[in-house]
Length: 226
Image (cartoon, rainbow, N blue to C red; front, side, top):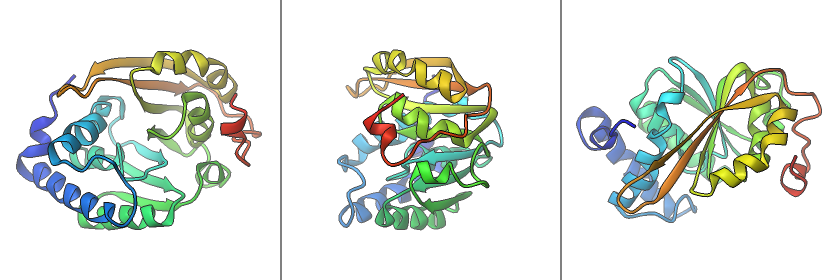
């Protein structure tokens, strides 16, 4: 895996990461965006972790992010990949306000949609409209699949950033992937370093349209996962 530290510290991208960190810590005093506020810890556990999946995002991809929160992995990815366009889907208005501020301040190619993922996937202009849908620290993989895969076009990718227990979640999510029209193509384990532990980038390809019944809504994605 590429060493992304220099991109977060030096040159134009380094300056943008400094500004992003400043905004993140400023807004974090008003709305809970992250428990990680130390600059170096944030660099490793948020910025570099977000960039770890960069190679799975095709050139010029139109991307959606579910549960954007503090903007991970989307904002770090856009800082280093100007070719990527993101729709940031977040249901908490105060977090959307932060994301809109960050997008404007960092001059990123993104729009913020204040909406639940299950509602976004029901909108004609968003359903099966994206080359990639990604998420980080949102839900277990079987639940997350139902939020994300309906947004991905056939031939596109669902990318999930997971922790050290990812293999258990991957096995658990096999039925969900099949029902939703996707198949696993990669599960890359890596050590984040700086004693930050093991991580996994999970990637699935959309091989056929998602049945109209999904996502089910009304919290069923979490209460009764596929």
